Image 1 (cartoon, one colour):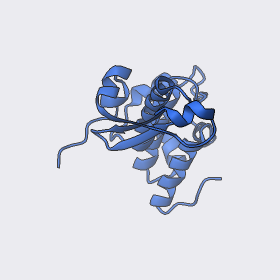
Image 2 (cartoon, rainbow, N blue to C red; image 1 turned 60 degrees about the horizontal axis):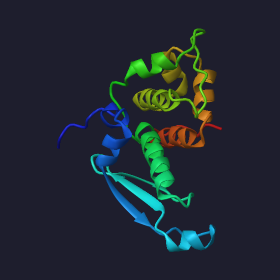
Image 3 (cartoon, one colour; image 1 turned 135 degrees about the vertical axis):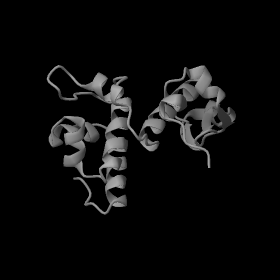
Image 4 (tube, one colour; image 1 turned 180 degrees about the vertical axis):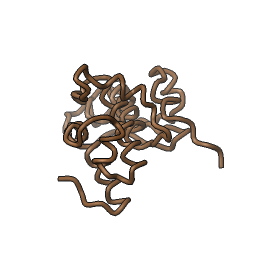
Length: 170
């Protein structure tokens, strides 16, 4: 088995380079959107060949917009689903404010790298939130607030908790 490369190997690539590592499938999406949607193959599925991750985007009638949305989702999925050991703490340090807390929204560029580190540490601490928060240098409440900021991140945190026999976070 070959050693797995760090998440940043892919997550920090330009859109063109990341897309070059993907198998791109286009297809006709079902659902509302009028006649044009049913006649054009505007939906996009990206399969990231090095990691096996798959994302789709089919909400727009524009294939170009769907491709851009799928690339954005792929980056989020890389941070959400791939674990680094040891975590890249530079991503966490960049996310912390002057007060030492992390106050980010999912729309900020630093959010997903910070979530990746938080989930890495959570996995390394067998999903014990208080221990993970201590290792990250933030309060338990701050870590929980960060994870709750995005439903997908929250779901992954609870998946890790289930994996390690912990109760779900509410």
